[in-house]
Image (cartoon, rainbow, N blue to C red; front, side, top):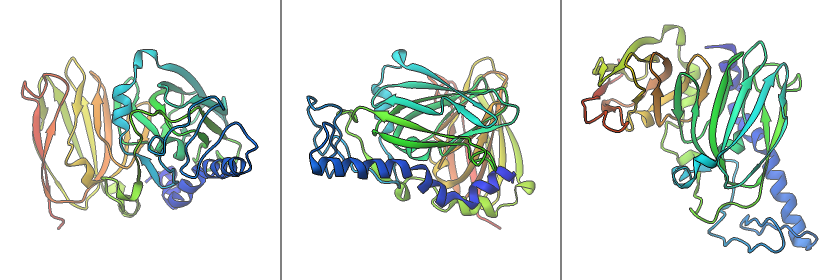
Length: 343
């Protein structure tokens, strides 16, 4: 396991609280102002937010109570409803040791493409826990792949590379932004993301406890305990229109690095919707960066490119493997992943 991974796992619980500290303080402050009647912006006890005094306040169903331990469970509804042709592109540069801009302002309900560009000589991290959890994430995209997840916990961008992050901020507040690679935060690599406006009235946001999310809850413990130097390695090729191997077997409790390569002329998808929630997911890594999340939803790989998935299967069974890009499954692009009990 890399030094960066070890650092992240040792500080996992504290990091989540740190990332959302600014939001918690901000909400408490606004509650005090509201009780005193001294501001034309108010937050009710149910965390209902208005932007100006002449704006109709959302109902309690419009903005759910926010917690540092919650995420947007119905993010796909916001992603589907958005007009991505109107998405605003915002560039954030990562260097030694800074973000530019280091204080970013976005508007709730508006789609964005955050172009995260590493202009430095070493890899850097773009981490904003509370912000990631309360945004509707569509995908992270690089020249190699598209990674779709419920929400990201960390995005690392390699030197000279760019990651495009497609998302919609939903919950107003101010969130910590930081690079948590060892020594980078201490050297000054931190900032804020402020979300203005009000949470959209439709769809109605559903904030759900992370602890009840559909993924392996003790994944970080399993990942930290695994010997990644001894991980099993397997390459899966994607072509028109097949997986090779089509059917493969993994062992529960054992770490694996799966290299997913598109050898065909069009992009293909590596999706196993029942298998993914049962894995301890360490990261996906391509030539541009590393992507960490509770679990993957979909991994798409562009022609001639590849991505590595670091994971530990935890539940024995046989799971469907598919490419769900239109027409690909129907043309025969499917298979199985069989997980045998731990030995």
